[in-house]
Length: 184
Image (cartoon, rainbow, N blue to C red; front, top):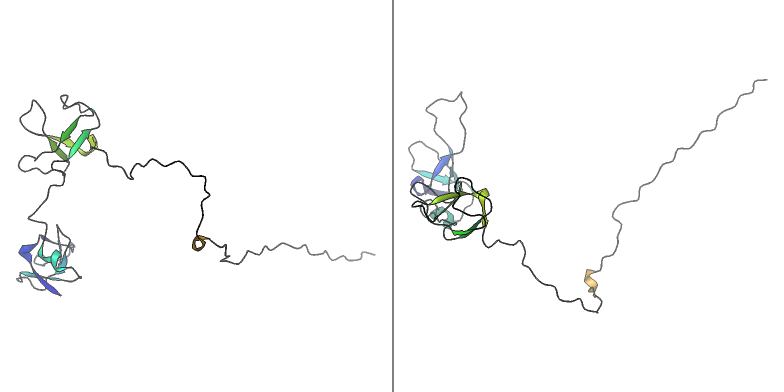
């Protein structure tokens, strides 16, 4: 079990209080809001949290709380629909993401771009743009002409059909003979 100072991470309590609990209850289980580190605190005044799971030292010592990296900054986007509130932005135009104004972040609701004719940047929502150039889920490759040679499968790739279950036995209904009785 490793000790971690509470000031190094952004720990939030994970256990929930029920309405029957006393007000002076203190939290036992904690989780870091940024990196997901989990741990427990065993007394109220203790400035340490004891890490309960196995986390690497790199993850314990380096939390992403202070060094937030804007992954959207300087990427290009293409407007994918007509924005009625911003008629100066044409559809299918390509823009570069810039740093947002103070108190805002790229990626909260969308990204911020600069527009000609406006002093302040404009926020474009996620459903109003696509990445430019569009990322393909697989690379586009032109297939060569098919050769005349038949495809040879190596012997270790041959599949033998092996039955893994017993065949079902069909039960048929047999008609029982009717017992005849003599009337005379």
